[in-house]
Image (cartoon, rainbow, N blue to C red; front, side, top):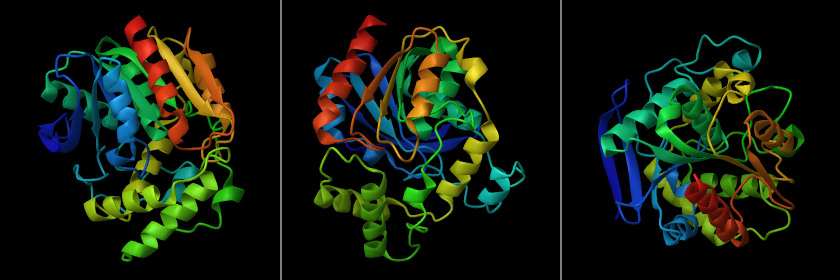
Length: 294
């Protein structure tokens, strides 16, 4: 259908750009993307697979990503200070991003939705389920964690050589994305470099705010540990994680599944922090099974 915009949504009154797949009368599934990533990172093949299961799929740009509202006038985020416990440069929290999503659901007329979140998107989905339980019919948390600093940490040895993404060089940004996905991707599955380059170029053309990912990262740190609140959830839940994830260690997925009562944990060997094409159909099958059971 192409990209659309929901304007003045949620308590912050932001604009959210989104794309919709499937029959509008089918159960709605919101795909919530991770830090520094745009909605186009959700593979269209995955969206189409969910639609074939009789679902309506909506992917959207979070605040500070893609074509949705950016908080460019906010304080410059200090990630090192936030890691040390000083959150004075935080512009918002995951609760604010959860409220954005609820406002977006209101704009689309959804009284409820099934949530699928990846990485930071999994954290936002968890927060929505905690703070707005009546609006969530099922929760799928992919390659994510609980906010407990003892689990789900990145392998900094794999990331240290990457450096920051270029600010004013489109081809340099594409090359950086390729290096990044080679570092954190799935060792058991070949990387489609042409597809990665095409998507990275699209992402650059849509938006390349150099500080947005840092603002989101500080928001994650300020939001803290959700473990005890996850233990209180009463929602059908699925946790998907790769055993080879270097961006969010498998311990984060295990901790998430252990915290949410009755959650199913599915671990994929050889999968890193991403969406290997050979696994997309199985992801969709498992998520659809959860949704229709819910």
